[in-house]
Length: 253
Image (tube, rainbow, N blue to C red; front, side, top):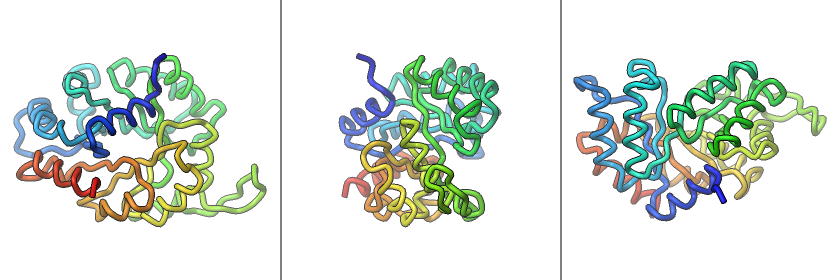
């Protein structure tokens, strides 16, 4: 039986005793080779993390099937799944092509934006993911200051015939679509707590924004985050290995 991405993440997090997802997005500016420095950071931090997340910061300058794939392959050699933070947000045909390319490049899961809906929206992404045994994580509430402008707006929920916050509707979609995870910023623990009441144990919460953006490990974990996505506070640290270990230990405590 092939395990789902959600199941593989849970098993690996337990095995490694870590819920830290390293966002390998921004690397030191003096790096002569993004691939080289990215791989070195993975080698230093892999004992204390359970997965890796990449954004366009690396994919654009390195190329999907060139430098990016080298980093993805290195992560896999270290037994780390890799999430592509591409925030898929287009029509169904385009979304299908996007997800197929990232999965063919080796990514284990993609992040998608539920704004586009299901029919001729994200349905093809979930179909490709199921066919290729990959994962789809939905963007429910972002970590930046202006997140409220979109994800916090009050909308009409036709299913319940009532007004509610957009992020609550998105949380319900994550549940209905059987997503492998939901992104909720660590900078908003009150939102994590509220969304957790909807998702419970069925859809794990991934929380970016710890460290540089002001999110706190303890607050996010206590509110209901299962995985903490941490980037610059590790990648730009003087000692990335020690930084990763410190965050891992803080989340355990």
